[in-house]
Amino acid sequence: MANAAAARHVTEDRSIRSSGIVLEPGMPICQMDLPLDWYQEEFKPYAEEYLALESRAPEVVLPWMDSYIRPALDHFGPRLMLLAHYYMGGEIVKLVERYGGKVADSYLLARQAVLHPDTKIFVESAVHFMAEAIAILAAPDQEVYITNPKAGCTMEMLAKEHMVLPAFDYLVERFGDELLGIAYMNTSGRLKALAGQTGGACCTSSHAEKVVRWASKLGKRIFSLPYQHLGDNVARQVGIDPARIFRWPGGLEGMHYVPSGADEERLDRAEMILWGAFCGVHTVFSISQIEYWRARGHRVLVHPECTKEVVAAADGNGSTNYLWNEVMKAPAGAKLAIGTEAHFVKNAREQGRLRGVEVVNLADIPEADRGSAGCGCATMSRNDPPHLVAMLDLLRKGTPPSLNRVLAGDVVNERTGWRERMHDADRAALVRHARASLERMIEVTEASPG
Image (tube, rainbow, N blue to C red; front, side, top):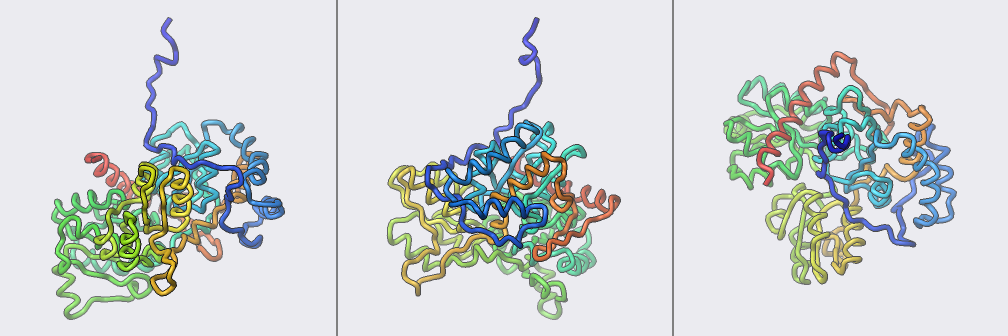
């Protein structure tokens, strides 16, 4: 009789590989402790226990976490998957893989529900739009939870639906089917749905160039949401004339803006319209910082959310996945200056040191007058060990808080934690358009994986 296992038709997903992070004895695994009143009521008992621990060293924190997380993992088995983004505060990035989870960039995170149909519960330690992207692509029998629903994105906060809709309606009325929306992954599902309505696509920093080239070949006028600097950098890569780029203000200013006079003329000539949101983490980097570290023998690598001047001057640029891989494959003795989120660079520095590679934060200039220190994503850091422990233990008990369940179209106020949830019919329509934009991104990306 044939071996039953050999007869199965299975596909092994190797899209995410181990980050290579090593937990060393005595290595601190927390960059900060959150105040107790920052935790939702169901999570406070876990936070109280955590805050009472004698230290943040692995030998103290891990046994406490194990007492809750191991029973949850045993209970769910392969039905549950833990996920985290590279930008998470050091403790979660280090710990999620320890518990069998996956750490990746936003593109690979978004695909996990599709790549793992037998997994029924995804618990993500990241920001809300990342968990929502998984929920948009998830099957009806798959559930997505976020460890802290107030973990948002400052860039996305400058491109809320109510801010963008007046501009979107204006542009559709003016250009009709000629307009094609491209929504960066750092947007809500509601904006991804707007892109889908125009026949457009989503993109990530890993694949923005491929998506914009695809759109350009269609002869469309691109409305790029929500990030002006990534749009600038991609436009340069694909050869769009800077004179044919129109900058629409971001935030509340963009909500009330109506082009007139010379602005109307420039708008009608534009091949790409950039919504003016930005990420404060990536706008602290400068040419002088690049010159400082390059003069000291460092190779400079930056994220494409930096300004176009910084990206053009750097030795290399790419997504978080690209930057991490450059650190992990660098030979002993290499010196790298990295311009991106500070928690990422901190983890890269620790792992580089174990391999004989020197890693510095591009903005970390010793002389105070040479530049400001690089910063971390404060909203991502709202996910920490007690949030992960509480979420998994409450799931095991069958009492997960409703607020932590993520459905497509959800909007959570990053300050109050209040959630706006769509009715089923409206959510179904949103999912149809938002999923189309994500699937189009995947189709374009996977068609030319090089």
